[in-house]
Length: 279
Image 1 (spheres, rainbow, N blue to C red):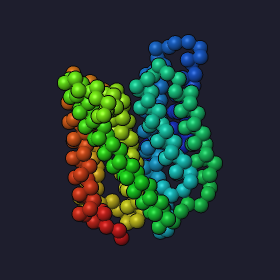
Image 2: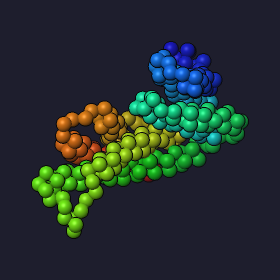
Image 3: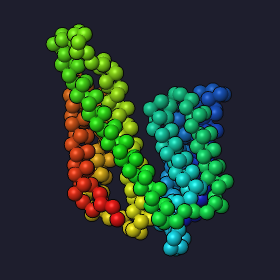
Image 4: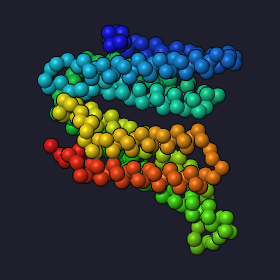
């Protein structure tokens, strides 16, 4: 299997994204039933080869002692393109009837082109790469934590405002809260932001450890709880967008309470484990 994956090059996912763009351009000609499944297939293939290419760059990185992993401008450009491709696929699945592809896909291809053009630039050392990824890890996890807390507050306010509306107490001018629609949007945006930020933080943490220690310790309590937090946020995001119960207030309560609980556990794991100790 690895022998086949090793043959993957930048051309593979560039071609997949290019074909997806060409398929989307058929909107200018007419409506075709095959277009949406074809675009999803090409984007899936593109993401698979894109991730595989970057994974193999880490797995089979040149054995130079001071060469950092994923530490060149070219690789960072490809990582940025991957993030844009993931965002596009999620948005396209939700609204395949729009022309967002006309904006996303050219930018993805341009970012890949930038990566190819700077491919000859010198890479950073392991220590420089570790410091860069440490900064990304810390910033992303901080943003993720803040977003979880904002989502929790929005969920609590949603419940309070819902209770006040049911008991006809929401008209007080001295004790006003945002509307349920505003709080619901804030909750969803916070959930998406926290999921994306924690995902970036987890990936950056893995790369940081590989550069710093040349290994990744899955037994570390902080790492395990951070992964659990990410899995929960990913599941909560899926529930939020694909499942609509009769009582949104009850769903908001359970989801925000669970998110806060997982966040607290993750923070405790980081503080009381070697994960949170600088080396």
